[in-house]
Image 1 (cartoon, rainbow, N blue to C red):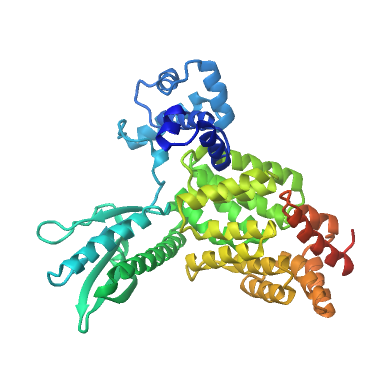
Image 2: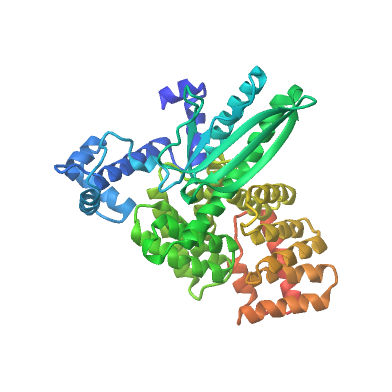
Length: 503
């Protein structure tokens, strides 16, 4: 810690305080968790003569009994059980690179995109520099995405780049000068595993005098379109695969549209493939975290008959995902934030979303969750900004009903009830299964004098949730210990009381 503080040029106490706020626990505890995770990776890829004692000693655990107890608490099994499973995996693979970085730091099953250095026509220095700079900027920005891995392909002496053998997608570009001083950059994304099928392409125009601005605009547009196109292509590929060939990665992709739909029916539909994925790959944190999210959804939308048991399960799954994800995958961090809300771990929610956004600022789901958090905190304008950012980053085929509902909630918090009702109705038209939105929509109608519409909205809610009461609504609402949140929730409950919902 002393060395780190000196390197960062901050007081050690300041570094410690901010580390705890951002990561959720002290640096030494985090380092110990990393060592446990590294030990687990070594147990899963052992040499023939490896023992648990060898691995514990290699990663600095001198007391073997304490190591075994702490390992079992964190991962739910004894080190010897992990080693036995690892020997089975190694026997199947037959080849293990023992000098490689443990696979916890790699993106599990992530497709590879080859970003080729953009080509130019003619020998203009400015255009050559633009072509080189924009391809490097795009590859650097895409590398922050945890949905795929990136290879920057530079041209060989003959001017042609060699396609990486493991590349699933290829991004190419060409810079040309047009009459009148105009520069045009043509970009194209292809699915190399599907006969170089064209996925996306665009043309970007600018002038020689505005090359820096053109470079930034191209990089921003290409990165966003590439992410959206690859996400859609990966989901399509997983959906088309026969059931017998599905991997854990494919099952997660199949579950994602249901996860993002934000209604209890969809949450239950997602749990099936997620539990199957956990069975196929017990060490992948993504299906574990997303299953925690789905359990939290059932709580928040009053979709379970056993809320206490559901809360415990959501918390256990979130803790297990944290143990399996020492490097901080933004998908896992964002999903864990839902489990933290359900478990009333209010201090963790901000930290988890901040970490997810810091790792991958272009991840649309984290901006959606930040929007909801800001709305819950009683900050409607900040919430609206987050939701607008989320909808820009999401692809055209991604579910947006929960963003629309969040915009409605932000307007409700701000007291703009007619606007709130309009956005809530848009959300319901996108996802009619999200009947739970009527617990906000009905008080909205009442607030601007639409008594009949409010009564119809409440009737829809009561038909979907027989036996619903004010107590059940209040128990399902997220509570984060903020007075502004309490004011908003109180306004909502007062409206439902005025409409006759029983206590």
